Image (cartoon, rainbow, N blue to C red; front, side, top):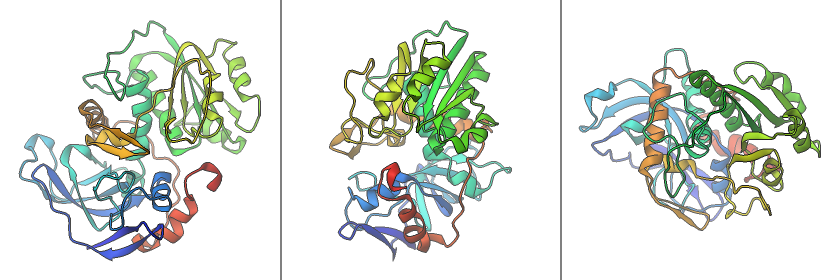
Length: 365
């Protein structure tokens, strides 16, 4: 089969003919129809962690060609079903293939069924960014999720039960509100409010040109500030009458964004980020609270090695991912973000897609 394969020495990827993946009994063989590009895909092609020969790519959507013998009947999956999910690609030093190929294998419970009202192009762009947002809000910061799962709050190292939320009204701030993760986060905040019966005021920081879109459905921001304004943290505090927000999510986590996002927090507030302190993309001293970080890859339930860290397999994180996918499969309300469709197949990914995303920072894009 054809696949897009890493050339670590030249910091690029090429189409090659590779063996079709060997399917485990608990896995699905999926014929890939659409893939989505994420900044991490270009980051670790242009700054390789993996070795030459690895299949790259994360997000996918496709059709089930073969069900493993151990896939339970209760899964309700059948041949020809349209499904979506993500793999780790070359975003670690682990020897696991990615999704940018004609066929891939994936555990049956780490995909979600794509409903009739959604295209596979739209579905391909949901899984990685959607789960990233859901992990930050529900798994790490403890906001009430709109779907059931056994443990309502966890950290990377040690899961814990949530603290009580006696307030009937909460506030949340999202920096990078117009990013794909930020847009899914806004929708999930709204779903949390609907399912919990709480009133949640949602504030964001983004470019002024996105204000109208972000205040409309399905995002519904209460108010937004321009991230270019040097005093935007003070403006967020002003919008909360000086109280600060209960939850803050920095969807950029570069340079001073973590430090500035921390300034918006109320006493006892919680904060999550998308890049680790160890990765070196940001620095911040004297934060009122150390922000919560975890890699979305933990949802795959396997050891992750990257950026000088080893994240051990987390059954709790995997269980959360399964619960989130079940919610999506049952029609959980999550509208697709605006997409830029790029025809041309795997052959066009590097020149048309990865180079557009750049080598990792927002400035490169």
